Image 1 (cartoon, helix red, strand yellow):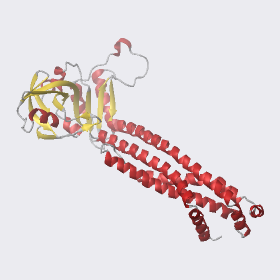
Image 2 (tube, one colour; image 1 turned 135 degrees about the vertical axis):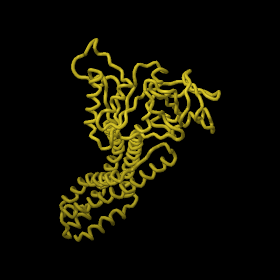
Image 3 (tube, helix red, strand yellow; image 1 turned 45 degrees about the vertical axis):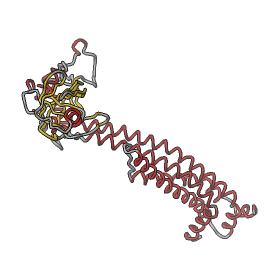
Image 4 (tube, rainbow, N blue to C red; image 1 turned 60 degrees about the vertical axis):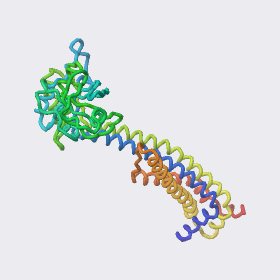
Length: 399
């Protein structure tokens, strides 16, 4: 049998049972649509979370008090951690490749001005905070390079705090009260919106030394260290460790590179995306069972036709190719329908709910279509093999 005749025969067989072919392909289409929809949402959330984290730069290393990963026996009464200090933050600037070192702590306090007040998050930071975390000042200036221990009582407002307390008027130069202490406003930050549920605009920034007094704390909550782009992270981390070991006498701190956090987060999100895709893949198995059922029925109905083909000279491999071709065609058409359905529903959901991130990579589309074809072929092997093994005489006798 010529390949063109084989192809014509396959199409003709599917056309002769249009409704049955459509319903069989629909089973695969529903499975592919479920896979594409779920993986599109999973990948959209994946990219959204990574973008939220990486907007502050990928060259930041966080140093926090306490050792989260310990080794060996307990150190007993000598196990108390030494807090991170403003002096530690200054010392870390001496590490090779480090360009910024920013002390950080935060608390909640009442801020009042113009007979208005509200409770906001107050960040105690250093003058290099905007450069360290890629945040810009919209008007005025950020905290000056004062002595960290005796910094002047200046404050920089988030955009939302400025709107709530001053409206359209400029707050620059005015006095506000934060937790009962007076500060002079010298700047307003550019709007950043919410990051993973935290409203960065509803904040006030004051010098870290002043924040330690305001919140009655002995030490910092964190030090953000920014290194030069392209610098070897391992060497920077080792340099930070050596400086703090020399100052603290033992490793009572935790160093976490931003890139390491992003890698771990990306791994977790990849697993979640794969898991939701696998759940959708269960529907594909149902579609595969549908193809297996329909082809088995088709072989039973066409025994005489198969016998005639064999009697006219068709070889076993050609009969096998005929039924595998039908399975391939059904699954490919179903896969394409499912791709259109899944991508369409994902985009409709994104249009209806702006906050729902959706992204469909082309690699997912190609992989889903290949899986659909693979399942169709696998489902068609058994009935196609049965058809190919039929004895032509016995098959004609069935007529």
